[in-house]
Length: 428
Image 1: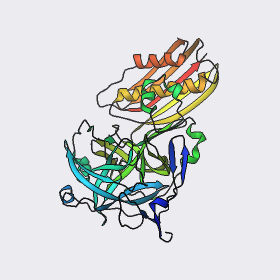
Image 2: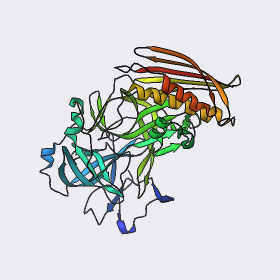
Image 3: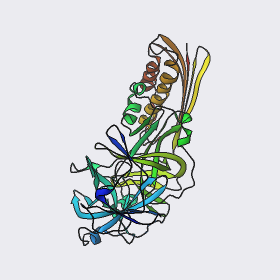
């Protein structure tokens, strides 16, 4: 690290790049000593790069004996794959319904935001005491962590709580999607509802953004950014990025709050390029990599559970389309399946019809013309194989295909999962 410098907060210049009402904060000088007149008296470096895996914990009952104002450490990812520890101030413990919560605040110049949920809170001697889960609207410095024992108990829980307090806001993951056109997606309810409010939305498909999806051999430790995959493939990639909280043998604990239920969603290491501070929603600018770390196997009110050695459960989605005898596209995707097979079937249909509309109808300017379509659909599940041939016609042919499948194709629901979904469409 660079030699330590003493700079008072009133003279501190930060590298801020203003985009509309947002601020991009990067290149923190990790060796600066800062005096924050509002929060701090004396402390060492602002942040420290770490690479260890904390194993010890401090229980909630022990924490209740610690005085207000005690200095602690919060682990965050702010630069590529580096995990930083930043000093924070412990303020109070309190209980809300069945939750055991810990209130802290960061230095005024060091904001937290979306994607930081799951960040471990440690004592200065390296014991994990809590996992970041909540914050406050318009406030990027005060945060709430839940007791670490409650997060580690995910592996034993059989059910989850169903509601959050109105006193604070969930610190959500960073939702990332590429290959997503909002206007086209409005035609397909499941796809649109899932992705329309994502934090980072890129219109370009993954095949034109390969530089963002690097394979890395970086270490994964508590404080690392991780990415839970919804969809990966030739055109669309969608994931939720949060923070790894704790490692216990083959089990990884993350997020510090509940999420979308999956059967075994593939989870990857993620990389952070910068941090966007906003009066609305601050978030870390992160992107997934191809470094697999395990499968998201359990969703709980207190966080998510990832198993290093569980094989992901995904459905292979193939969509082929031709127009007047000429092939237009052939795309392959993998969809992380949920416990709801009907939802998965509808989402796969949304995805295929969205690709037809965006890549066949719009480029040929035939989205509103009277067309016919010959279709072949094959759905393979754990309990059945469905092969269906059908024809539809009309204007908005993609919507006619969508309506036919969602209205006429029923699958066995009980304890069943989609393995593959293949739709081939010939337009004329």
